[in-house]
Picture 1 (spheres, rainbow, N blue to C red):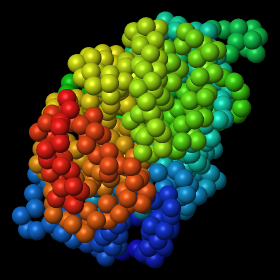
Picture 2 (tube, one colour):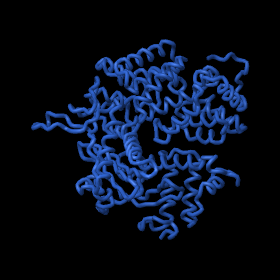
Picture 3 (cartoon, rainbow, N blue to C red):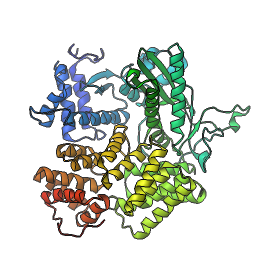
Picture 4 (cartoon, rainbow, N blue to C red):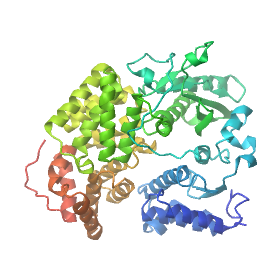
Length: 592
């Protein structure tokens, strides 16, 4: 048996060797995509736990053993351990949703500490109904969840998500495939062009598990807040009821149902939410949200929980988008082109880009009044301009003009569409019209602050324009909410730390970003390494750029100046590159 010092270890984990074998599977998997330091982090905390030294797993100890920090380490000033732990939790989640979907032993690092937990995934026959969902949930729903879930324990919301979703392999399929969606006649928001082609979500009234008026009021309030905050996501439809019809075959049904419950224990609130695919009753996502109402008050707590649920479900690259992409079946539904765009942004290949662009061009012709498809088509043209080294494109002024025309058209079709305003912001930014870019960005964020892509992109533009404090706060929020594409906004956090003078945190954030997503990410790391005096590591990045993206180095000055508006920010970036060995001329003319 495993040492009794490992609290919470499942009784079916017979020895520490079971855990070590599982660790080996994780570390050897191609789906576990973290650098060597993060791997040492995971190995260290597991070794210490198996050795009965879990009480020593504090930020200070980990910082010294894994990150090489000295005795002066201050966790408040240096967030390296906390940041890496968050990254590690997300990567473990990704592993158990993909390569590890069938693994017996589940390793997690519960939030609030750094001590790993070990559990055993059970088969459906071995499950106890009361373990699948919080008490008070109808037995029929528990059994439905049990048909696809692994063993779950109340109090481990992260593991509950992995367990329920474990049998669903999360992957983005070819951008040329398309999706057949059900349509709904009863929308909770004013209809927009093309809305009938989008997946719809039925928001059911959250159940009050605890007796009393307060719990009932909170459950109603959370439900209402969820509806209000889902409506601005124009890629989906929101419904509150399905009209009765004698011939149900003649009435298209909502694609998903969002269900949940509210439980109160003193000042503590626990809300459980789950997204159900109505076609087969499968639970495709579930999570718990705990909050102390004494900290924020009832109304703010209620709003915060609703925002967390909505962001998880409806954000781009989130639960619904992953589930929809997995079920693409081969129709000519224009919404499939929306999915193809997000699939392309994850793959970031020229083939995926061209497939998405072609699909969106056809969708614009078919539905000229749809603001969303015009906005996304605008972004595919803009991406030829902002990601030329990754996509191997040679954009011209005409490319930018096309992107701008489409963005303006999208905003004209729907002035409140956050995606259209986001496209206009980015086009104006890369057209060097900063005031108009920030105006469009502010309007996009005001329209839908729960859209993590809008928040993240607006935060990046604010930061690069020189408003680093305000912009970095938005980028940080986007990262904390798992904004996609994966590893995209971490490079923004690296820039934030670098410009503020925290080069150690900048390097950590930069290495946490997806360095292969865009060669410009490696250029950021290169400047940071130069500032740190890490010549050997800088040379590795230079060699990579010369080999994989040779056009980057000759284009450094215009590319940096296109992104960083302030001359002092450009100077800091160029100084780091010079220190790394890149000959950026100091007397070259600077552009506005």
